[in-house]
Amino acid sequence: MKWLNLNYNTDDMPLYLAIAKAVRGAIQEGQLQAGDALPSSRHLAEQCGCNRHTVMNAYQELVAEGWIESRQRSGYRVVEELPVESSLGTGAAKDSPEAFSWRIPRQTQSLPFRKAVTYSVNFAGGCPDISLFPFQTFRGYMNEAMLRPDIQSLNYGDNAGYLPFIEQVDIFLRRRRSVVDKKIVIVNGTQEALYILAQLLLQPGDHVAVEALGYAPAWNAFRNAGASLVGIEQDHLGIVPEHLEKVAQQKTLRALYLTPLHQYPTTVSLSASRRLKILDIAQRYHIPIIEDDYDHEFHYRCQPIAPMAAKDPAQQIIYLSSFSKLMFPAARIGFLALPPALYDSVVQYRSVMNHKANVPMQDAVARWMKSGDFERYLRKLTRTYERRRDLMVSLLTQYQQKGIDLSFEKPDGGMALWVKTSGPIDQVFELSEKQGVFFQHERHFHLDSRSDQNRYMRLGFAGVNEDKMMQGLSCIMEHLKPV
Ligand SMILES: Cc1ncc(COP(=O)(O)O)c(C=O)c1O
Image (cartoon, rainbow, N blue to C red; front, side, top):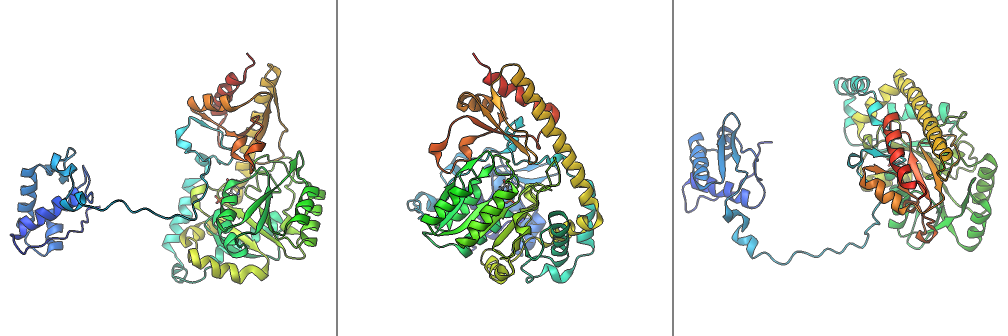
């Protein structure tokens, strides 16, 4: 970008010196940085309403002072090594008042997320394999969205989402997940939905029940609205209904947040009988359920069990899902399938934080879904992830046979394995990380950090190809070897 906003004053000096002073000031203030290109003399002359030679003279002055240099074919640039004077900044900066101290009453807890690029093998459980995404095919739908846009939809309004995309999501939900009788609102990912719901449904001091081992970004959204979280106990079958009932007897619960299909992080599927018990408790104690179904399609043993929201005659379940795993997290597309009674309030509230989700992206995804390419890709992706799950299970079984004390259940679906070790894993985590191999430690998921047994690893299989998986596991297992 060659645009440059300059403030200059010609009261007591010729114009070329005033321009030179303004450019020097822009460098000193950091508006222009080492190596930045300057506007061409023609552009800057147009901007300042002066002759091109005036700008050339200003630039020559700055070259002589050592602020900028002329490079062949790339015009003028700020020098890489600025004159010493610049490090002092302007006179105004020297006298600047003490830095402002901000009051941040809504500070949130930091999340244990890592940058994928930092690791040579990243077993973080929520990472899809983005390299498998059909960028070429999708580009065609993006092009169509740009070539034949629905102009009206690109304006303000229609805050619930782009209608053709809502229609596709509606069909997808009915046919693939048996969710009917809900009203759809498109959001920029599940996180936005959680934020809207928390702000809309919760008040400071309210209690929200969550899985004791669970998804910290959702907790942050609830806490940020002033809610206190209550962890519901889990066993090998998922959350324990009897404990939920006990909590409900003691406290008024304003919401129950659940990941029933592939519990996050353990990947356990909540059985049909437990779902019924939980729904019964929710009905008797009047607790809204927020069902987060973030990776529904990745189920391998059989058809995934339908969401709880598929059978919700009382309309007390809010269903959330996302395209972050079906596409990639940066697509920022998710949706709420709402009880109709909540629809207007949610659509109105969403404009407090944002007007609508990105329409060209919704348009492209709608075209992709309608064409059938989306379904084909999903089938292929699910098969790939199934193979990776099987490979991880077989590699871990081989390590068990070699004497490494591990235990795990083969998950029916999801994108990760929840693996127990016989000894502490702190050191294994740190040593592996130093060698560029990342996995999630159980402490990333406990609501109550005192419950950390320092024994469980979450090993994501979806985002790593076969070679990386072998390499990463071999590194981790090296540190787990009995001494
Ligand atoms: C439990 C859970 N919910 C939702 C999501 C997706 O969130 P978003 O749609 O904001 O990317 C994830 C992704 O890791 C998740 O693990």
